[in-house]
Length: 196
Image (cartoon, rainbow, N blue to C red; front, side):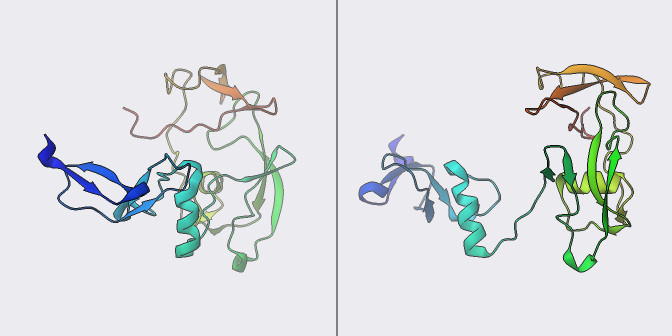
C-alpha cells in the first residue's frame, strides 16, 4: 500500500519509509556511497552500534564525553588478568597477584592468574568480568557475587560452544571448557539465573 510510504531526504540521502507520518531526524552512518544506513536520533547513543565498525558508539563517546566502560579485564602476558586497572584511582588500592580457581569454583585444567586488590574496594562502578571476579572473591564492599547457586553443567547452553570439552568441577559434577587462541583451557561462561 503506497499510502503508508513517505519519501525523506534528497539526493544521496533520499530514502523511502513505510509506516511513518513524518520524516524523523537521523544520523547517517559513514560508509560507501551506496550504504544508506541511518540511526534515528531517539535510538542514537543507546549503546547498540547500528552502524558498521562501532562508528555510532565512537561518535557518541566523543560528542557526549561518555566514559569508557571496561567489561573485560586487561590480560598481561596472555594469562594474568589485571583486575586493578579499572579501580578508581582515589582508592589507592594495593594489589597483588593470586592464583584463583575462578568464580564457579575449581575446574580441572583451568586456573586464573589474577592481579587483585589486597583489601575490599568499592565495586559500584565496575562491570562485567571485573565485577564478577572481585565480588565472587569477596573483594567488593557491599556487593554480592551474582553467580551464587549457579553452576555450569556439561549440557548447559546446548546450542553454543560446539568446541566444548568436558571436565570435572569441584570434584562433584561435569562441566565444559573451551580452548583459547593461546592454547589454554577456559570456562569464562556464566549461566544466568533465568535459564529455565
